[in-house]
Image 1 (cartoon, rainbow, N blue to C red):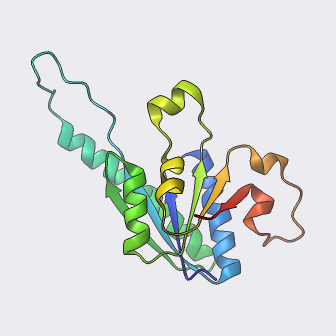
Image 2 (tube, one colour):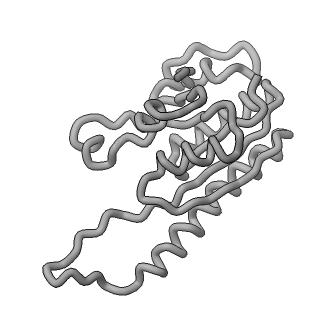
Length: 172
């Protein structure tokens, strides 16, 4: 079905739930996982003089270190479940573009990711990484939505498909 599944993570609580569901799904399908954590810098406003305060290099290092931690956490959890995982990190202002690029470069047949379900002003400010991935992905995208797990019917087995834990399959 799917030999390689890309699992983007940002380290949030919702990402953790999506990671667990993705690992279970990969185990059921006999798939490998590629865990991707993208270090995203905060938007910076220039001063009137056009100068930025120093320390940008330190920020990059800290963000990349956190991203490496997130990707490695997925790899460790996958290994414990008997699923092969390749952890990757990237640095980008547009995480969706890196997710799409990684899916192509790593020959993934599915992207399994969380959606924070932002609406209104927060979506306008933060954007929607998931929406952009859905719009431009060359492969199917399975979306794990916030709050869906709480309303899902109980699973019949411990290895239930992601639909029972809140994931919504979406093809492109």
